[in-house]
Length: 464
Image (spheres, one colour):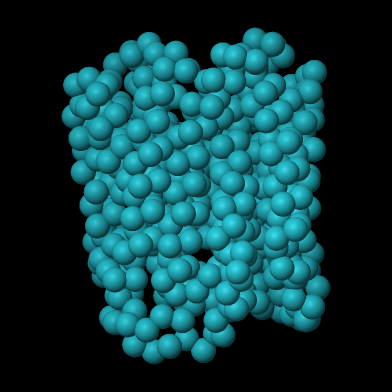
């Protein structure tokens, strides 16, 4: 359906420093995304130096993503109540301190504490930064800004593999954390100077702590259930119990929201068609992107025998393709609209996945996953612009938190499903599982394209 009405939400006043602000916020988001994949390459060295077993080593990765994903809604709502500028600057400071703790960690427990603290800081920093992007730009400029934002975020995951290989092979694994310290502090100082002060008249109210505890526990439990499903299987008792517990906690959160005097969120936000479409697309896009990194990394290292640095270099075209897809999408979204561009992005991603599934050598596989990455890069822009395009300034933080939460859901769900499908190939015994995984991703992209064609809004003839 073509939308011809103009939103009543007032447009933000353009800041003369808005592109510089975007660049700094984009680097901050890039740092958060890098910290997921940059650590993955360093895990063998961390295990050898600290004597970590498989379970604790897994938590070095999962502890960050669990805290990050579980607290995103709380971080988004806090941005609306207390001001995104404050939370961005504070989040950068805490993230830098947590990174220092992780780099200096003498034991696995200290390293895990640093990773969890990093995730907590990221949960408050990420939705606050995205909220500032949404409220700083408007109309076609917002699409371009979200294209740049998505390019940095999507490309950062692939660049993390290259950076992790370089740092681990060079000064050593602690530097995958130490590098965040000067970058985080410099960003905090720069943003303190250029960001306009938070509005003096913020929405009245206070943080609903019981509601925040419920939704954080629910989200964290569900993400943990998805992580466990990748190792134990979907029908394992622990997976079933954790999933049921998450559903129960979400229902309790809904009850709390309906009866609280000042609830954590307005549930009507989740009933808006653009928000539903945007969150669905970001879920699918992230799951597809995780498939590229997960299967590609294991295929190159475990099956083909490349070292971490070589693997990182093979992912460089993937990073560039992601950035290119997101940047182009940001420029043409206003002309094509979410429906057509979303379908196109999913189509390109599906073709790339199918090509990777039938690849006979590494060159063809890199070409396939790069094409898939270009499609998913475009999807991230469509998802963000659709979900956040019509929210008011007082809802921008929470809406950004919702989008970011579904991003984490997509990552956990994608890793869990693909690790189950490709279990035999991950062990390095054959390539059959890799092909099955890529084909599954291609089918998911095709189904999502049909759903997008049916429910996504068409081109907006009038922008805010």
